[in-house]
Length: 365
Ligand code: HEM
Image 1 (cartoon, helix red, strand yellow):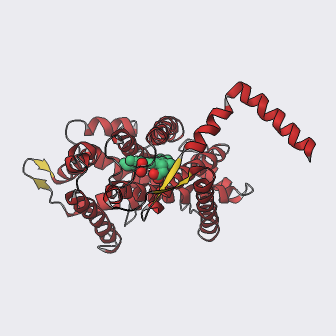
Image 2 (cartoon, rainbow, N blue to C red):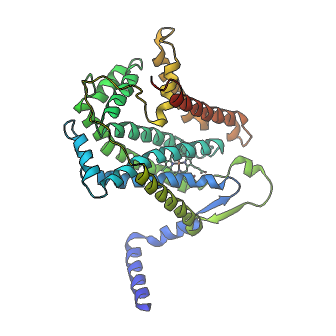
Image 3 (cartoon, rainbow, N blue to C red):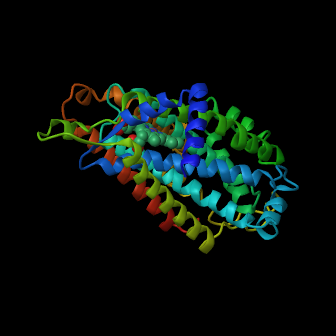
């Protein structure tokens, strides 16, 4: 036993001399996490990070068999599902973890919004987070097409068509994304490049920045807790908080395995551009609130197409959210800002109601 311990010490000393591990250890020892009635929300960022790592690992495995062309994509996924040992499991976990990651991302965003964690000096943490949300949704949009099945094909046609109605840049964006006038094999290779190279690289850089900022500023204490009297408590990040994180991650893994086993990812039929679009084409659930909103808009609003007005409104809402830390002056001055709680709650309610309507109203349209 002592020999093992000695060997471990020697290895540690060797690595420490070269990598400066003691400094990292000292940093981990210094970091702590505030304890109060909202501490539970601090786990969501770590959960999102865990699911992102699951996506990177399962995505890398899928790449071994996937072939990015209109002729072979569908068949390569079919082969993976039917012939490759545990291929179905890896693909199903990738599909489920993508959905869970976007779900935890939204929860993380809204908890951070309602707890005012974006306040000075965390403006850039918030803004890098908003960019990460955009990247995650683009991951979902581009990944959806890759199996080249009927549903994905027509959903991508509708999705890119919607982007095409944006005034001035829409037409250009549509052609860049599609690689031509219609959704073809050229679109597939573009989406593939975006999904497996461009997005992972950009996301990794931004996650790095986000985590650096979290590390630099420490965890924020919500203003309402700060204003309350009473002792301020905290727990060490290492090992107390990290071990709790670990319990959450293992639970998430168990949930993912169960979902993948009982509800494996489907493949459907191969895309055929020459058949007419099947009824009830629907986007992924996280686009549903926008999709349904566009359906309710009239064909024309003043001089613009109704859909264009809708998309610009969503664009403006995203810009507003991006600059929230600068607009919310009351929080910046340490005062209560109920208006921003109301705005946050209104956005959540809007998204929930429109998503619900998207799945229940006119189910065949
Ligand atoms: C891939 C996406 C993301 C990852 C991996 C991630 C990860 C994390 C982690 C690990 C933390 C520290 C623990 C916590 O507070 O939960 C954190 C904090 C934070 N995140 Fe994110 N995050 C992501 C997206 C977002 C989004 C979409 C927003 C909001 C627009 C955001 C805003 C923040 C802020 C303001 C903090 C500081 C919280 C505080 O100090 O209390 N993040 N993030």
